[in-house]
Length: 362
Ligand SMILES: [Zn+2]
Image 1 (cartoon, rainbow, N blue to C red):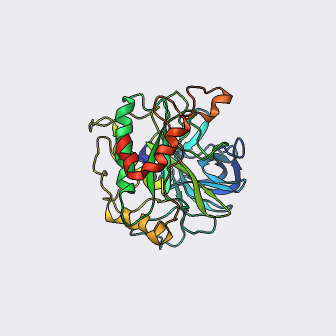
Image 2: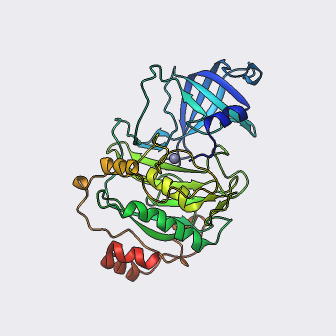
Image 3: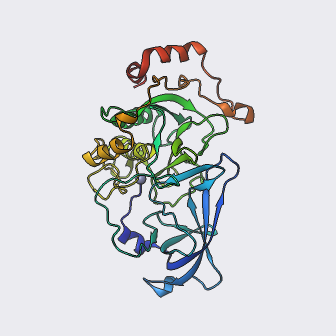
C-alpha cells in the first residue's frame, strides 16, 4: 500500500526513463530467504523530462521484491513481472548508491501493448501457472515481531491487528480463519527454515526498510511452485519513514486501516481498481475508511477460498505462545528472548477452537 498518486510520483521522481529489460537475476541469501529480482535495464528515453534522463553509462539496475527460486515463488502485490525484452517506464529515485522505484506498480509501469487490460474488480496473486493462489489450510496463525511499532504501545498494535484479521476471518462465505500466535522474534521475511510463520513486523532501524520510501507496508506472499498453495505471508510496516497511529492522527497511517489491506494480500488478493475497496492500492494519512470489507473484497476472497474448497481438518491455529514468552526458533542463532510455552497450552488451544481463541486474545 502506497501513499502517493501517480501524478505526484512523476513530479517527485529523480529519474523517469523508458527502458528495455536486458537481464533478470533472481537472488536470495539462501533457500529460505526472501527473493529479489534484479533487472538490468537498457534505457531508451525519458518520456517526461530529458533533464531527468539516465546518464549514458551503461544499463540501469533496478531491484524488485519477489521472484522464483528453489521451488518457492514470492510475490508482492502490484510488482510487475517483467520478462526479457519487455519495455517499461521507470520512475526512480536515488537511495544511497542505488536507483529505486518510487513505488512498485506506480513506479514501474509496464507497456501492456494493447490498452485492453483495464480491470473493473478484484484481482488475485497468481502462481507460475497463472492460477489464483490460495491457502491449503483454513487455520492461519500470525505472529507479531517483539519490537512492534516504535510509535505505539504493543497492546494497541495487537488490538488493531486483531480487528483487521477478524474482519476477514468473520466471513461466512470464505474459509480462512486467523488466530494470533503471540510474539515472535527474528523478523525474517520469507519461508523460515524451521517452520513457516506468518510474521507482522515493523522496520524501524535506519536502513532497515528495503523498499521504496513511499510504500507504507508490504506483504511478501510465498507460494510452493509444485502445488500453487500459499505457504507463508509476512507483512512489513515502514516504520523507518512513516508514522503509525490508532487514533486517526492526520500525520500518521492508521494501523488497522493498513493492516486490513495487507491481510488481503496474505490471502492472495492483489489490488483492485475499485477505489472504495480495501484492496485499492492507495490510502492517505489519517484515513480510517477501510475497516469494513467492500463487496469487491469479499467477492475476491470468496472466489479464491470458497467454502467448497475448505479443508476438513479442524482448526488448531498451530503453536500458541503467550506474549511474555515469544516464539523464538532462532534462539540457537542468538535471538533468545524466551522459550516456547508448555505443551499444555497448545492442547488447550486445540480444544477450545477458533472462537474462544479469538475472544481470549482479543
Ligand atoms: Zn497493497
